[in-house]
Image 1 (cartoon, rainbow, N blue to C red):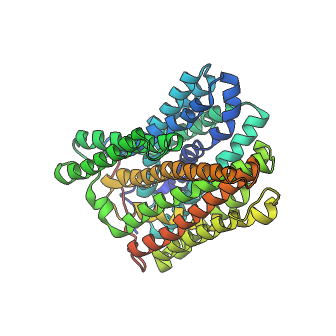
Image 2 (image 1 turned 90 degrees about the vertical axis):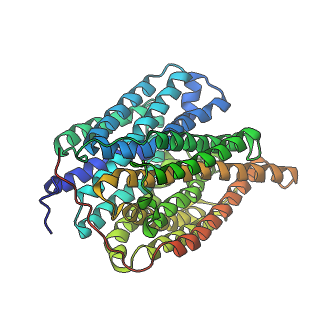
Image 3 (image 1 turned 180 degrees about the vertical axis):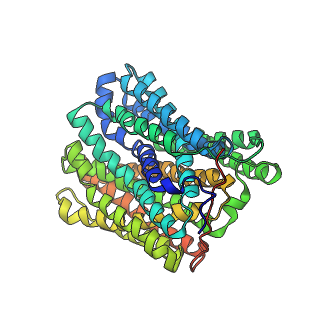
Length: 482
């Protein structure tokens, strides 16, 4: 295979290491701060209702600007946008770690989300155009998918270690340790690649999808606090959905669309995007409610609770690399995605058996191992398929779609499962069936049942949508650098 058109080919494995660090930083930042929240709250003195804004500020900026970040990478060049994302993320993290009050911390988290929205699609699209050999591409995406799938659990582990032994501020400062070396390496390794000539940005499309996704993510966060039928929640969700619909209409009519419909109308890619989104709706039950269970019921310390997820990290990494290097080239994407959903659903069913007096080894560990196998198959397969077969000038926005579906799925899943769990706990206490701890464990179990149902339903939907058989794994060879 001729790699002369790819200026990155000789340095591809070193580039993968840099991109892996960038992806890890973005993914773990969704959870590394969670464990530090109680310490940050005690230090800065903000209220319980305000606490959610530390999480929401990041999610709002990140989720709403991903597609814009992806197209910006296609227009300005992936190296430039990647470097802006890395440096900006480091600066925002430094500000957050130095925050002396709640407002500065929220601003820093929003800035992290903004620069993360530039960083994530630029990293994934660089990976897409760097690995043009189908066999090597499978290995590279297996590693990248393993990082994406395990990053949230790694964030819990790292958050526990840093909070317990240093300070909650190091949960933000740790990004400097990752971002600065990655930026220096990226500057030396990468060639900036962008299309020839001037490409106009689709401003109406950017405005409609950014505001629409912002409304949906914020609506989900309000649903968690106010309920799904609250007027503000309904207004945000309906308004967001209408703006997304308007975005599709705009994209079908403009000359230079932000998201060309050819990217999402391909069945394989559509199935991959849907698979990522649905997996994130279901998987947040693992991190959210198992973290509560381990710390509040089994009385684990933050660091012990973090390390309790380590077996799942291991199985995700093993299955992610196996899926793209072995399964995908031989049997295509349908079976790995379908089987991954089924295994994840079985893992959730295992978690439904937890009780106040059950043990980690017998009632948590088996589910973590099975979930890890399932999530490893889903994430690695969906990342590769979702970015395969696109032209280099669409690589950024295709990568942004993969990240966007993850973020929207996670926001919906967190709000949906939190609401269901809260209702289950209230009903349990009202029925006089036990004390608050028993009610909490019951609510976790109910959430796991719902998550299991989501995964099993997702297996059917993705199985029907995703084409069977081995798909052509077209190279996305990069043009000469500029």
